Structure formats: C-alpha cells, structure tokens
Image 1 (cartoon, protein in one colour):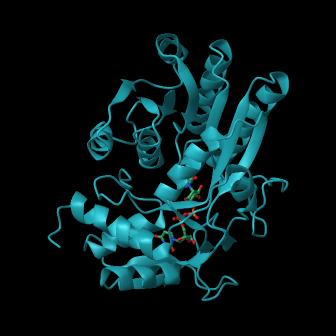
Image 2: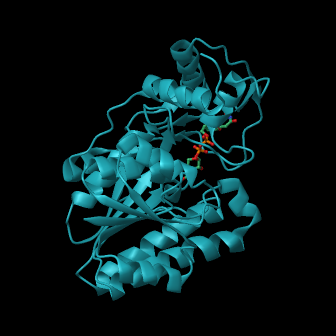
Length: 334
Ligand code: WQD
C-alpha cells in the first residue's frame, strides 16, 4: 500500500517514513528540501533496508502534485509539508499563509480528484492558543499568537469542511505537542537550519560547546520551578502515532492530541539531559520570550481510546537519543 508523505525529509516526516516502512507500507515522498536534505531519505533507506520513491517538488504546485497521484495508486496521504517557525511566521505572514494553506488545498483537491480517501494532517498544539492545560480536543480554539498557528487552524477547518461535503473521507488531524529526540540508530534527528527555534537544539549546541550557555526564557511562571512547562514527546512515538492514525478508518475528520499527557519544565529537561549524558549545561535566566505560554500539556485519552496509541518513551530517552544523533552529526568522539 502506497502512502504519499509530503515533507517526508523533515524531522517528523523522516521518522514517520521509518515507522511506515517498518509497518509494511510503501512510501513515496514529495519534498522541496527547503528545510531538509535529500540525504536524510538515504539514511531512512539505510535504517530500514527499504526503498523510498522521492519527488523533489513544491507541494503548492498542483500540476506536480497531480502527476504523483496519476502515476501511483495511493492508499493515503500524510501531509507534513509546511513552514513551521513560529517567530518567522510573524515576520513573513504572507509566505506562511500562501505556502501552508495552498499546500493543504492542493493535497485535498488531489485526494478528492483521485479518490484517495484517507488523509493524516500534521497540526499543532499551537492551535489551542493561550488557555489552561490539559488541552482537550473538543476545547474551543483561541486565536493563536502567530500566523503559523493560524495556518494550522485554518488547514484543520478546510479538511473538516471537506469531510462534511464528502462522506468518503477519513481525516486525522494530529495536534503535536513538543517533538524531541531522534531515531535510536543516531543516523537521523532534528537538524534545524540556521538559528534553532526549539529548546533541545539549543541544549545540544551548548553540550557541543557551540554556545556558552542556554538562555532560559523566564523563571517566574506558576510552575514547579518557575520555568516553562511543555509536553515533550519522543519523535518516534509521534511517528508511530501517525501509523496508528493511518490505520483508523473512521469516516469524517477527527482531532487527536499526540503528546504524553505529562508536563516537564525547562530546568527539569536540562537536569535530565545532564544526568543521562553526563554533560554540564550552563544556563542563564533571561526575559520571557514574547508569545510563550507558561504551561502546555495534552489530555491524551482520546488517542489512547480511538487509536490504541500511547507514547512509550520518557524525557531521559529523548535526551539520550537527541545527544546520540548530535554526536553522530558532528562526529564528536564519544
Ligand atoms: C519549549 C520551552 C521555552 C528555547 C514550539 C512551537 C510549536 C511547536 C513546538 C510546531 C518553552 C523554553 C526554549 C530556549 C528556553 N512547533 N526555551 N530557551 O515554544 O513550546 O513550541 O515548538 O508545531 O508550534 O511554538 O517550543 O522548544 O521553543 O520551547 O527557555 O533557548 O523551552 O520558553 O518554555 P514551544 P520551544
């Protein structure tokens, strides 16, 4: 069974390709490599011993996308392709709306035209906006603080409306919390281009000596130690959640939180990284980052009940695997 994975060379996409291949699916990737490299897919093939068909295309290009649907009998589409930097989206809103919304429209229209009736969409916990955790799927969504979050909320609505108009479709809208870690082989992982956005790439930069210290954005939130709390999920757990969503044939559009249901503070993450990898991570407390919320974690009962999926790995596993990849990537001698 052929699965089209848009953005399949990205951090979450590449790990999901591994889970798909290991579950017996055939994988076709469409990626323009704007935030990834084709060599990642070679690693996916090395890890699994299976072939991946790759098309280097822009998923906003309807003609190029349709040619894939024409040439392959697709079972489903997992749509990752999109820009995902929150801060960048505030500075480049039109790029984000154009790229993220148009790519969703192009994929949805192709699925309708070629009767590919299963779509798994890469959404984000950002769509909940600034409200109290735990976040539950049927909560009202508040406006997010950034165009990136808005493109995810809008894409969800586009796919929901498509399902209302066309009962053939089964759509899973997966709201990720904070993906961290890397495949246990150490051959692929999170490789942000330029200045990282997320916590773990900063921690590993400090661990490699590329940065003197970690800046911790604020320590006076109402949390266990004042630093921000998030629901970090191992990227391989997230990948398996996509396979579980793919196998759920429930008609209509359904939202699922993919998280662990637990919150971890920045200082707790730093401590876990230091203990697991026996590396000191110096840090400084600096001002809060604009747009940050204090606490964000998931209610994960729906995915457990309907997808028979739960995250298995913990914070220490994430820290161990993230660092293993960095050592491989920068060929640091152990
Ligand atoms: C985590 C915690 C920071 C960096 C973002 C996107 C979200 C999703 C996941 C796409 C926060 C603190 C961070 C640093 C720090 N991406 N931090 N120093 O902001 O929860 O979510 O990534 O879907 O849409 O918004 O993740 O890793 O940036 O921050 O103190 O150098 O670490 O304040 O509490 P975030 P993050």
